[in-house]
Image: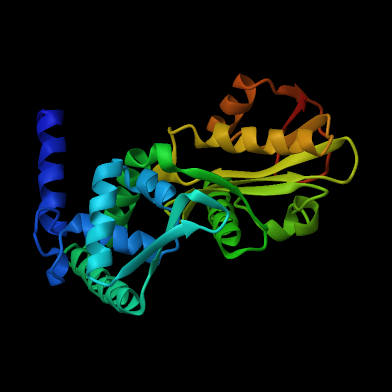
Length: 290
């Protein structure tokens, strides 16, 4: 068996070499990767300097030097935050926006080139997703969103596709008790997604009716992000939202084919109860008193 540590280090060398992490002119634009990443993050709307520093995991001194260099190039301007003079915000100048666009074009071409070298594109992407999720675990956020939004619809589509693969007789959302989107919006309920650098990795819905009993619906975590505790974090977010809406009892249904879901529910205080709906797909029913 090959040494696991050696395999990790080989992977690290391959990635740093491929992306040009050590180049003094990243993607041929005349500045190293650190400065390019700051420019990229600002261009993507990360304007608060303190939050930008945390996102990039940089110390204050290096963050200041990188920003100063970009300011001297005329690519970025920094100024006090309008609501708090102790904080600073950074924005791209017109020249900075052009440089950001140039990096975007080159980075997209680089990514396309990487994918083009493998005949197993989807497997390669799945491996990349798993590595990115694992390494970025502490930066995965849980956001409340409209269940009709594009990221939410993506998660639900993936969830339905997985049920179709795993259920012995498939899954057709038209035959299930699909919750109305309005029941998963305040003040009745809520919908949450897990986001890794802007890409959705999971979801859960809180379906309310304005009464003290509500349901948990559509808990899903992307295969690449399983084992990272996201299911529990999503459930915690839904339970917290339920308490804020004065909901005292939660219910959910699931299918015995989803063993990992059952395990999560049993470990986090859910109790199995009798059937409470006529949905044809679930065969297990749970309740939790908050």
